[in-house]
Amino acid sequence: MLRLLCVTAHPDDEAGAFGGTLLLYHERGVETSVVCLTAGTAARNRGTARSDAELAGLRRAEFAASCKLLNVDRSEVLDFPDSKLDRTNFYEAVEALTRRLRKIRPHVVLTFGMDGGLTGHVDHAMAGTFASVAFEWAGRPDRFPEQIEQGLEPYRAQKLYYGTADFLLQDRQPIAPPTVSARIEIGNDRFEKKVAAFQQHTTQAPLFERVRTNLGRRLGTVEMYHLVATRDPREAKFEIDLFEGVREE
Ligand SMILES: [Zn+2]
Image (tube, rainbow, N blue to C red; front, side, top):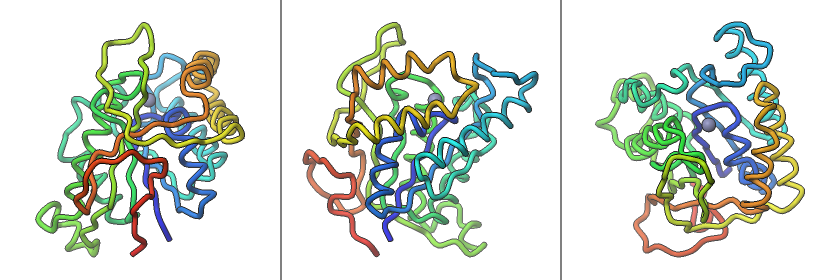
C-alpha cells in the first residue's frame, strides 16, 4: 500500500493547506497520515476556552473531526509550543518527526516551505524545516541510532513536497514562495469537503469567511506543490500527480 504523510504546525493547516490532496489520494487507495506539531493554543480565536489547556482540548477534538471528514487514516497532534517553533529545540523536533517517518514509512511527504506557506506563518516555516531534515535523516542509520536500537529501521521516503502557490496574499509579511512544480486538480466536491473540514475548527469560526475567500477565489480547485527532494536522483519536470514515479516497496 502507498502511504502519504503530511506534517503541519497547527490544527486547521491539514484542511486549509492540504485538504484536497489528502482527500484525493485517500480515494486512490493511499494511506494518509497527518502529524501536527502544536495544539494551536496561541490562537487569537479561542472559542469558549478559558485556559490554554481547555483550548488545546478543543483544538485537538476539532483536528480529529477535520481529519475524519478528510478520511485521514492516522492523525496525531504533538505537544510542541504554538507560535514558538522558532525557539523550539531543533534536535527534539527533528527526532520526533524522524521517529514518525520510521514508523509510518510514507512514500511521499508533504509540508510547508521556508516561506511559511501562503500565510507566511513562522511556525509553518519551522514545521517545514524540521520535516525536511527528518526526511533526509530518517534514512540514515547514523542519525538517532537510539530509535534503531529500540527496533525502528532507517527509512527513506521517495519524495518531499512543499505546499506553495502562484500568487501572494495581501496584507501579509513579504514571502518568496517555492516555485510551483506540481498542480493537483481537486475538483469541486473535494473543494467543498475541504472547506467543511476547515469549518470543523469551530474555535476558528471568525476566520471562516476569509479562508473561504482566499481558498476559493485564488486557489479554486487546485492545490500547488514544489518538489523539493527525491530519493532517486532525477531532473525537474512538471507534475500533476504527487505519486508519479513512486514505487510501492
Ligand atoms: Zn497554521
